[in-house]
Image 1 (spheres, one colour):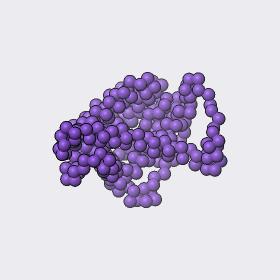
Image 2 (cartoon, one colour):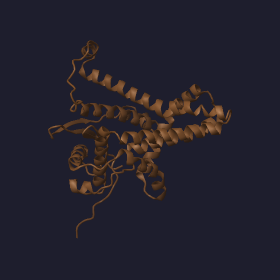
Image 3 (spheres, helix red, strand yellow):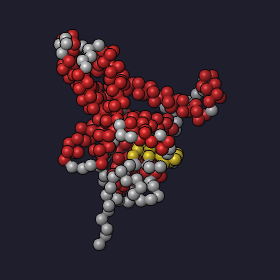
Image 4 (cartoon, helix red, strand yellow):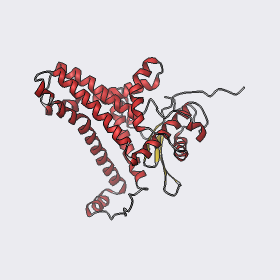
Length: 321
């Protein structure tokens, strides 16, 4: 009688790129990109964790902020790597400016790349904070003109605006032609992880039959951040009413590390457990993946399989969540 596949939850996870996928395992990271000629471009690296040097950064709540920043940096780096193989139509490789050449000479290519990536991460986080926190705060201030002194109405308006802006942003991205292929690679990443967690051989056929929505997805985490920010800010502003939009925005910024830390722990808990409460808890994040996760074709699945195989540990079960 054939042995039943043993299911488990893995700590391996990934990110969709431009015609590619990044996978991270317990000790390695791999980026696999399908180039225009159909060949695979592969980049591998050993992972180094800051918590190994500074154990306090691995403590609950703190580790969420550290892991989020690390994921942002590595994600942007991988995205930049994949983008270099697909210049825009008619775009020719430009000569670096005098300033870029000067920075490259002074810093060296690795430090120059790190600087560019850091700037990109800071700009990306700044745009996200502006869109999902500053804009709702400013628009929510208009409620004070209609209901002066009503903190409940102000908090409710900001909460609704945060959710509307977040969902509208994802819906808009899902209709962009270039993003549809990225989101299909996102589906390939999820399906590959599901296949591995089901204990099945990593073949295109086995991966194709898996679900494309995964409870430990980044989309679910971002929703968790928005939801927790609504709860935390509602409590804080109920105890400490703040009406001035600039002061409210600064208060939101001050609360953000705590919000990210709580969101990480909640997402981690949800990923480790099954049951009706967990299913209810993760349902909104899974629904939002309808905007960010599409069905992949076989070539995308092959990329997902290759990326995952490169980061799996030699010792079976060493990547258990």
